[in-house]
Length: 188
Image (cartoon, rainbow, N blue to C red; front, top):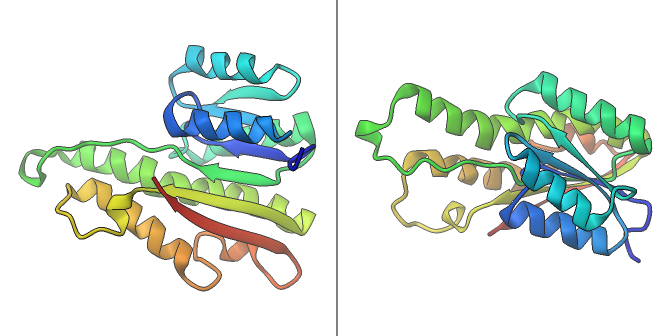
């Protein structure tokens, strides 16, 4: 098992791509924090499928730094380390610009962009202390295609760009020369 004893936090892991990633990492031996915002029953099903000794479900809205900090504390309390962060949580609002409210716009930005920042920042200290870690930011193919898309989806483009920069702005605090921490982007 390639990931035996590694600890991974997967945001938005109660369904879809996040669930698939959590199951795959667990099949390789990783211990998994199945993050969810509202889908507790679905998250608990993922934990059950993985096994209670290898996974735990944790409710945290990634756009709320205090909830993310609680998730990190609980992960460290439970397993003592964080080796992998998969930033997968995201929401879609396909409204046209002229009918989208300020609150709808802000919610998408808060979850899809600020949530990634909050999670990267929260794991950075631990990964630096461990002198290792992996951060993977899930984006959208819309981030690299010139197709007309509603503006909220474009924040995934920002994540893509920031991750691709040298030492990625989303992980630069976790990448000093004394720590082996890498970041990557996956467009799904």
